[in-house]
Length: 183
Image 1 (cartoon, rainbow, N blue to C red):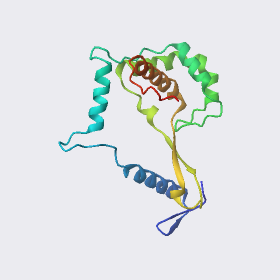
Image 2: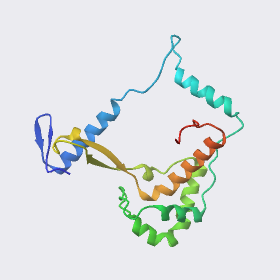
Image 3: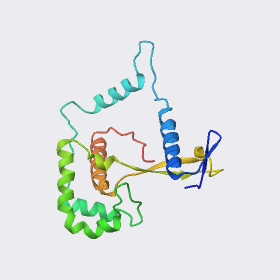
Image 4: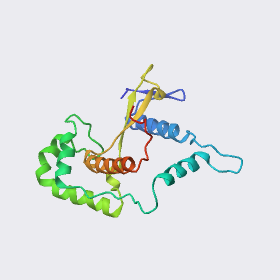
């Protein structure tokens, strides 16, 4: 973090004010993007319609996407795959501490993850990120020379991985991914 940044011709050096200025800038840059769409003369979104036809041609309504429950063994394996130098999120739980405590906490974590899967609700605490400005180029004192990185809690990673892997398996098994996606 720089000792000061320039915002609208003013120098800001208070750490809280710097954090707020970065937060404001990152929020503004995200809300200014325009969603991609292609509207025809009848007001129909052609991209949405094309995607809907693509999906409807490959699966029928009886083929639901269901996330299977996660096992304790899978939770252990997912934590083992996380690099030991992984940054800590807003919860401040480091991966080294979690790996040491894993034998004692795996049953509880598995229960939480499966509760999330069963209810279809991702825990709010798993969504709270620590926002880190990462320097890109030129002057370190200009906030537009930074990009945001969101560091989510490590404890959410096994659930995220399980859901993503389940969804990818579903998409692959029903031919819903572009054939040349992985080239």
